[in-house]
Length: 325
View 1 (cartoon, rainbow, N blue to C red):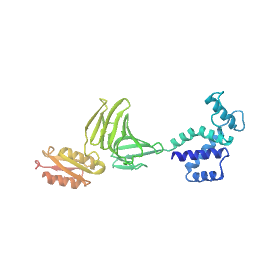
View 2: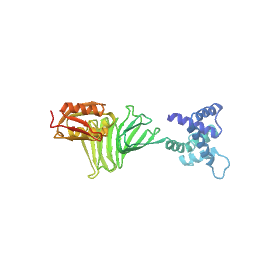
View 3: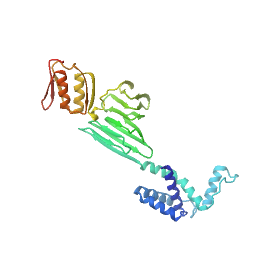
View 4: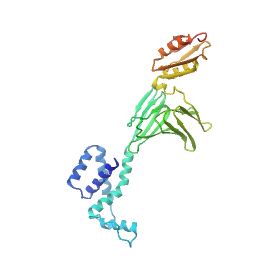
């Protein structure tokens, strides 16, 4: 890509100073026809050249300009170390040197894309141009600044998201949650950062991430680890990852000797239904896996496993019993 851009800039420089061959003019014309952005690139180059005036001279004196550059580099008493074969080529190359930084800056900024999306009442998933997938939980939103040329992406997150980056990893991704930064070193990780919560959580399912602040070194997390930042204490800590953090996307659960109260709280959060318990059953423990099952099926299995009664009352679901098997 860089070699191609350098070649195009060389063609533009030759055309502007009148040194391009017919084949080169035709090649640049074909390149401009590929997209409106390419045509704008050429138009910008011509505009910058037209506005670049040398004081006191109607024509561009390439020999004098190059001699001035040589004197500044080598000193007035030293001979130029390189002689251009023609004034026209010298003018073209000098122009390219002068405009390259400006063109590069223009193209860098023009390549930045912005994406915004919000999840209000349902989970929303969005794929970026590099196929990175961002899944937002309810009551969350993001703004994404994406620059394919720079190979950078910044996810400004308010809420909860699961971020899945392809193994090819063509872009270096960073999540910003307020003053916190999460730099991706791996592929799949979860971030929970609601503005009104004192705790920010980062859980890594695959790969590694760096979790930090500008003024605090932070921690590096590997697969199976959860990082917690306490806003009140300004501290980071590591814990064992919750295997169900991505359930709001996958609808998959892995409960290992989990108390029924916590199981039902997780199900209620993911499926958006109020679930209440009637009787001394909150401490009943459950070991079970669910893979993308609907809520009714899950609750029926729990009821049969623990000997409990499940009643859907419309506004809520009631789980009742005198105890557990």
